[in-house]
Every structure is written in structure tokens, then in C-alpha cells.
Image (cartoon, rainbow, N blue to C red):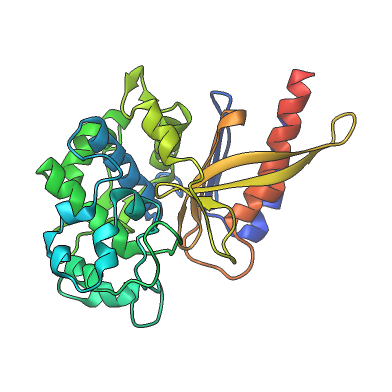
Length: 322
């Protein structure tokens, strides 16, 4: 596969690192600066997908109840809340960001920044009014991710990092990371984790391999498939669908091999503010990791995947099957 042109095409996107793992091999590894893919960096909301994995593991181990369990089991104070819709919220609603809270992630009264300035994040989130019936509208909300983090701690009886070290990071060989905590000492569920791009790739490969790592099942295949399927359509300007703290989408790719063929390539991905991505393309046996040090206006690293990486992979895949 000819990846030489990618190093020229990638420059306008100001990407710090790009790793492409295709067909069981590392076929492309770009670093803007030395050690860009091995140094720790904030992965921002990619943290949500890590949390989703830990929730799935907890469900596998029957430490966390089924997705249709109401969160009043964990937050009984909601039984007394005058907003009765809160009593209908389930674990699945939290995972799909459809809990129904009136929330603006950045800016506004019910916002993520205001939560992070509060003395008790869980209380802050639970006290927000609802604007929609649970399960009907996807609203991006790192507050509900913190509710999931608290549920994980309640259910496992240990800290998130201890649980991750034992059941996820340890088996994957992820030894170096940093993870922020809220004022009550609960590790942040919606952001706050620092990983290297190389370790982000390990996490993506775990999902590509349907939860198996070194012949050991870390996450049941059923949970991997359930958590990454497109559950609910997102609201524009976002595109695609949302699963259990994973984004799901497709890109139309024209293959210029023989007769021109246009097809939809489906993928799912973790996304972090500023330009951090873990993209899994099951049909092409591919994981792509893209990182960027800070947010830039204009071109997104995801555009680089859609406009350059995806057509290259599809054309190669088609040529190899002819």
C-alpha cells in the first residue's frame, strides 16, 4: 500500500500523530515531533469511550445491572425530586447521552464548565431540570458521564483507576497514564484522561478484535457490538449516530479501481475535543489513531480520515480482492 502521499496530505490538518493499523500490521506512523505518539497527552472526551469499556466489563462481571436499570437505584434522592422524568432515566440513557437533562456542554447556565466549578459534581448534575423525555434526544453532556463514573465506583467498590488497571489497562499493557478526579475523588468520566497515541491504538485494537486481547476476553463480544452500534441519530451540526459513548458514522468512498464504484464505509470512533480520535473500521480490519495538541479552526483530523485515509484503504482493499 502506498502511504507516501499521506505525509504530504496530512500537513494542512496540523496533526501531532497519526497511526494506521491495517490487516494486522502497522502500515503508517506519522509524528509531527519526536515522541509525539509515545508521550502522554489529554485525550479529552475519548475518555468517555474508555469509561464505556469499563461499564461493559462491569456488566460482564454482573457488578453493574442491566442497561434498563433505573438510576434511582444508585441515586435514591431522585425519588423525591419534583421532576418526575428523572425517575425514568436508565443506565442506557446515560450511555447514549439521552438522559433528557437541560444541558449546554459549553456556555450557558446548565454547562460543563459550571459543573467543574461546583463543589459536588454529582449533586450538580442531578439537580439540573429535564427538557426532554429520557431516551428521545441525544444531548452532549459530560455530566451524565460523571454519573456513570460514580455508578462504576459504587458497583465495583473500588476506584476507577484500580478497576481499569486490573481489567483493562493492565491486560493491554498500558502502564503510564494520568486521570483527573472530581472533588469527591471520583475519576472524571467525560474527560480528564491522558494516554499516549500508542496506547490509544491498543484500546482501538481491543474493540477491532471484538473484546479479545492476546487470546483473552476482556470484554464480551456481545457488549462490544451493543456498545458500538448506532443507537440514536445525533442533532446537526453533528453527523451520524451515537452509541454507548461511541460515535458512529459512514463515509461514501469512490474506488478508482477498474470501474468506478462508490460505497458507504461504516466506522465508529472515540472523539476528544481538540482533535483526538480512535477510529475503528471493522470491514477493513483497521484502526486509526489521530491526535492534535490543541484545537484549530478549519480542518479536522476526522476530515483527513474521511478524505484521504478512507479512499486509500478502500482502493487497496478492493485491488487486493480482484
